[in-house]
Length: 266
Image (cartoon, rainbow, N blue to C red; front, side, top):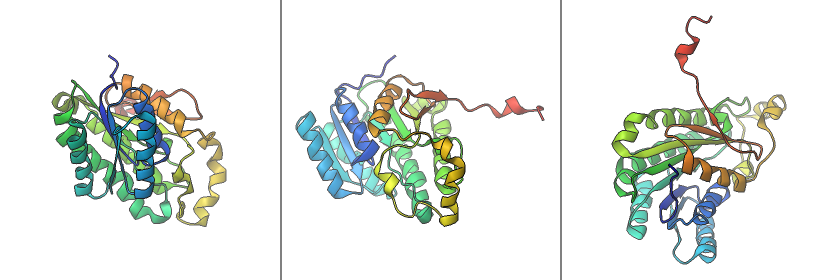
């Protein structure tokens, strides 16, 4: 059954620009009732709120300054969403940074921030405040979360962590108790502000490894394309599934093999 976006409410982390902002635009164009943009960048967030309300209608978008690493701040964004729109049906854990040079912060934002979102969304808000039979959580990962890239070992590790979260929280046991689908999208290289983040590498030696894997990264795609494919995944994908969006092409499901299939093969 196709998940209906019309009249639903979404909260998007990292929603002030890039992929997150285009997620908001794509959802609003499908009849979304309202969206909360949760982001640490206050100036960009206010501008995004104004842009969306001008384009899609008054009070459609709502910005809340949010550090996803801070559990209380993140929870305040959920509370504000319910207070403004009366319900919440979709969570997109999209906030993330790609900067191995500041790897502790990278781990906090990409891993701790996503865990905070999963706990708040799964166990405290979507399970209680969705208006239909089902809610949806989408976690934005990366193709780095499926095959580690030499130049970004820490970033790759943070995205592998998201894959583990989706496998665990996307299990039938959690769906039965919450009626919340958990999904993962793994975009390849995409035009986002994150590509301009400083201190991307642990050292110049790590940057030099780019030449060995450049062919694996593929062509740079637009964030608009990623958003359009996200809509398809949101509406149609089965709980606990992983979807790759790369090279501006249609998304496809990535299936992790069961470890037992390798038993006695060596």
